[in-house]
Amino acid sequence: MTSVQLVSVTLALLLLAVSVLGAVIVTGRSVRRARQRRDARLAAEVRPLLIRLTGGDEDVEEVLRRLAALDRRRWNAVRASAVGLLGKVSGQGNAALTRLFEERGVARDAVADLSRRGSVRRARAATVLGLLRHAEAVPDLTRLLADRHPEVRTAAARALGRIAEPQAAGPLLDCLAGGRVPSDVVVQALIAIGPAARPALTKAMAHTAPEVRAIAAEVLGLIGSVGSVSALIRALTLDPSSDVRTRAARSLGRLGTPACLDALTDAVGLTYPTAVRAEAAGALGDVGAPAAVPALRALLADHHYRVAHHAARSLTRLGGPGTETLREAADGALGVRAAAHAREALAVLALAEGRHPARPAPAP
Image (tube, rainbow, N blue to C red):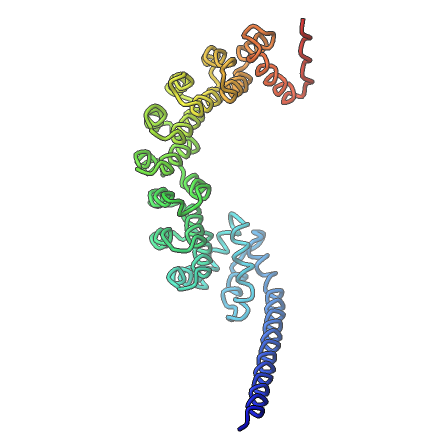
């Protein structure tokens, strides 16, 4: 075979391969579109049953029986819609959907999918188990907090928050170290667990990773753990991390006990870092005790803007004594710097109350 013939044969084979590949692509697209149209038609037929199941206005037993008996094609076509509804409905509708998923073996299949190779499949399974609040899956979901794919770890953390089993609180806190799961996802999950997470949160206040201690301090305030005041005061006073101390101050403001007031009053002192002083000044407003007025008054002329700014805003939340202090400062009794912060705070207070801010007095 000459070189010319060899080139001709090669080109012919390439053209054939391209033609075959093109035919495969076109056929594949046609098949996929046909399948999508079929699934859309089947889903449209079944969706009214789902609406009836979740409406809560009728006896659902017959509807449930019909949905549970669907053939595989129809169920697969409507499954995504059913999962979407599970995250949107509550009460009887949610309970009816959960029964449907149990009868269809969805939870069992999802637990099996947690160990599959595909990360998308594992993440989707974790999401479904969370929506179903399938408590038996907690150990498997906890294991996924160490998955090598971030989307799987995040889905597992969200699912654990939905299930709200207290045993998940410790692993959720541990996965904060090194940023394995976004902190906001972990915070929401721990809030969902609620006061039952307190033992794990208190233990985490001694964790070696400052990011874990910081989130633990934050959540203790968010869940209203008054029994953790001593641990938070210890963190505010002694923790080497400024972030931990700042979050501890914020939580003490939310809890608002007399011990919190004393600790926060101390924390606005000059021996504390500026960020902690500023947060403590803001937290004194959260406590809402008029006894904080003298400490906040002294901060209005502070050289650090955030400290003085937060002190002024806190005074607007302490009723008559706080407002009177701001008016006194606005008139210049505590100096120019304090007057500027006081006037700003009073203007914001007036706007919040639907009043026009008072015009500052002209300079003499």
